[in-house]
Structure formats: structure tokens, C-alpha cells
Image 1: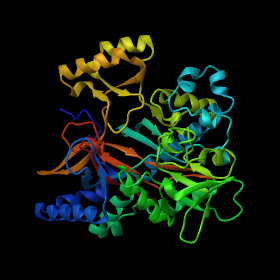
Image 2: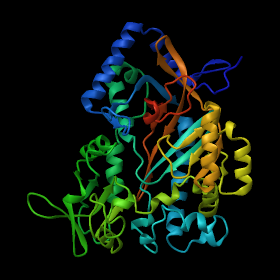
Image 3: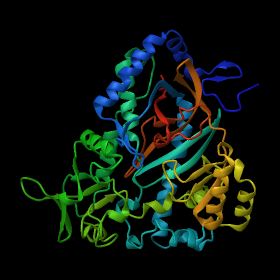
Image 4: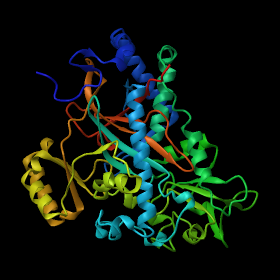
Length: 472
């Protein structure tokens, strides 16, 4: 019986072309050597401090993310299609944000319901009428993709605020190159190590008009208790910029300054890794100790640029997601290159009725959920779990969307007995400033548990290096 999922390494005719150079590599690797290399990888991750945090489960919240040594491989032709689709989507999402914080033409045209935007908790009235430099609201767009066939890719969700995980993409490559240098000497694997340079260039390109020199860029972190703190320090170090907390910055007049041992230093661009609600206690949550009082006044007056812009989250809401193909057509006048997963909006009576009748067959997600939490995977859930979730759905239908259980593609993954297929997704990182750029690769997340479709690290998933084979 044929596997019901697209296997990225083997198809009906045998070994697929992208993986030919890895066939001998894994077949000729003794189990003892593989175990040694796996231990070496874990030691490198531990030495580099590559951890993520899981709170609320007791014990040490910092975990070593599971790393699978078998890389995922794309041909240059496959990547070109993905790259075109990702850039198209990033342009449309930014056009949407510029529009809904201005005239709202897409709403006036009846293409998106007004309530879905203006009553969305991620819509920030504080930036309505404001146009950030170059009209860019979302400067780092992480687009989660799944594959269901040789030429079939779907966008699972968009991340327009502060998408995390890029440090794993870069460190996965670093670890693989250290452990298996011959694979990179023998194969044309496109590099990803230019990401930090592109990110810094992107951030500098959106400096405010009041900046009359080389822009001073800083990374704003909530601090070491944040689950992505490693990534914050990692990226700041790679870009050669300061990592600051809210207490390190202050507002005076029309500008934002950083406290230094040599006196105040003006800041032009803030790459923020904290949520909107905590950015400025005078504008958002008054109890926030993480932000900078008065920052939003400086931002709106053009004294500093915040990346990504406050309010960008309205574009990655899971209810808004269903309209992104319409954004592509409306703003760009193009057909979408990447398709959405078919989605039912439970706020709609007919959609809700269908979802309630087929709840055991569907994946149901919270509109504002993330990290694999607050969701139901119907086919993998028992009766009691389904019934409990059905009650939550009935109580607050507008809080949920539903999607079919996709046949996510599988990639070869090292297991105790050798290799076995495991389900994967992909998050490339698209940088939007004066130009739109992305490195050839992304973060491949893998569901290490057999049969599982949940790839999130907080839910037991792991990561792989992602290869794009460069053209000769």
C-alpha cells in the first residue's frame, strides 16, 4: 500500500533527484558513528547555548531543541517558485497594512469585512493615519509552508510581528558544516550565512527621515526570561549591534536615546522583539516595565523607526489569513503563487455548522494562538478531548478557524533503527525594506513522534538543516 503522504526523498519511481547525493552518505554510516555524531551535535548546541524555554511544566524551563542530522533538500527550481511566492505574499501583506491604517480601500471595496480588521485586538489605533518609512509595516515576515506533493505547497500561516527561529536556521547549518564538511565540499549547497548582513541592511534602509548619518540600530529584548532570548543575543552579536532592554533607552524631545558609559547616544532604528502591548506604558499597557515611556510619540513624529511596526499583527491574524489571496489580487493585480489551506471561519454560521458536524476530521486553531497551543487535531484526539473542545468552540466561535488535516510531506529522519519518514514544515524569513530579500533556505521543523503532525518545539518537535542546491 502506497504511503498516503508525499515522501520528499522517495517517490513511485524511487529515489528523488534532490536526495541522490545523500543516499550513500546515510547508508554507509554505521550506527555507532551516527550515535557519536548525534552526541556531538547536542554538545555543540549546548556549548552554543541554543535553547528554547517551556514554562509551566516544572523543572528547568530551558530545553535543548532536538536536532535531526538528515538535511531537507530543495532543488533550485523548487526554491525559485517558493521565493517568488513568498516575496509576493510579503508585498501584499505590507500593502494591506499600509491600507488599513490609512484609507482602508480593501474594506471600502467589500473585499474584507470591516469588523475583522477594526475590531481585531491586534489592530492598533495608535498608528492609524501614520505611514512608516517606505510604507513598510512588517520588516521580517516568517511564512509557514507545508508541502503535500511534488509541486504542491500551501501557506499554513503568516507571521508579521516578531517571527522567531531564524537562529536555529543559522546554527543548524553551522553544526552540519562542522560535523560533515565533506558534504558541503562535494555538493553545491546555497549558503544562508548572509542573513545577518541582509537583516542589518534591511533595518538600516528604513531609518527615519530625521536620521542624517549612518543609522544607529539596536535590538530591544524583554530580557533573559523570554523564551527567545538566545536568539535575540545571537542576532545582535551577528549584526554587530547593541542589544538593549527598555531601561537602557529613554525619550527626550523628538528622539530616542540609549544610555551608554560615554553618555546618551541617539537611536534611529529599533528592532523590537517585544509585543506591542509592552512597548510604551504611556500608550499601551500602563503596567509595562519592559518598554520605553514616550516611545510611540517619537515614532509617530518620525524620530525613530520600530521594526516591525506596532500594529503589524493584524495582518497575521488567522481570520485575516483567509483573505491574503484576495490581498494579492487587490493590491498587486496578480494571481497568488502560493495557495492558502482551505479554511472555515467559525464566526460564520454556515462554517461553524460544518465544523461542528466534522470536528473529529479537522484541525481547529485559536485565531490568536501560536506555538501549537490552543488547537485541536481532530483525527489524533480522543472522544473526551473532542467533546471538551466542542464546548469551547460553541461558547466562542469567532475565536476559532478550522482547516482540513493536510497530508504533510515527510522527510527522512534518523531514528533508532535507521531512517524513517517524519512530517515537516518550513519557515523561510523574508526581509522587507528598500528591497525584499531572503536567503535560500529556512527553518525546517520536524514532528519527531511517529505519525504526529505537530512540529512545534514546545510540543515535542525538532529541527533540521534546510538545503537549496545551487545552480552550476
